[in-house]
Image (cartoon, rainbow, N blue to C red; front, side, top):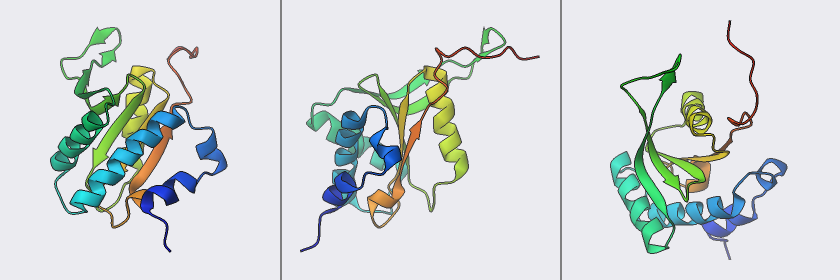
Amino acid sequence: MMATEQEQLTHRRGAEDAEFPQRELTDVILAAAIEVHTVLGPGMLESIYQGALRQELALRGVPFKAQVAIPVIYKGTALQTALRLDLIVDHRVIVEVKALTAIEEVHRAQLLSYLRATGLAAGLLINFNVPLLKSGIKRVVNSLRSSAPSAPLR
């Protein structure tokens, strides 16, 4: 008997995953994403997956905010253009939803920038345009939290 995608994801825990911040919350988010992928499959627009994931999180009673604007501060001044995050779940995890042929390093860097801008520790990059959702999931950790001192720029 073949294990379900959820069981495979739950049992796949490497050393990096074991230390991932917000593990329990990200597992709940990923279970919701797997349900969305199971129902819709690959090939839809990103906005469809975003809406379905918001609905699935709401059905599960998981608090979130969608399309959150985060101001960008440049040399002490807030720019008129803000970052727009797909989801912030329970004020703790940023979720970026994609529907791409492949996730590239620039997408991971984008999520890491969002984590640094908000000071949050954990993010999920979820690409729904894959046959098996676990191959479209990237966990990203902000190891340079905003509370850490940084050297001044010259």
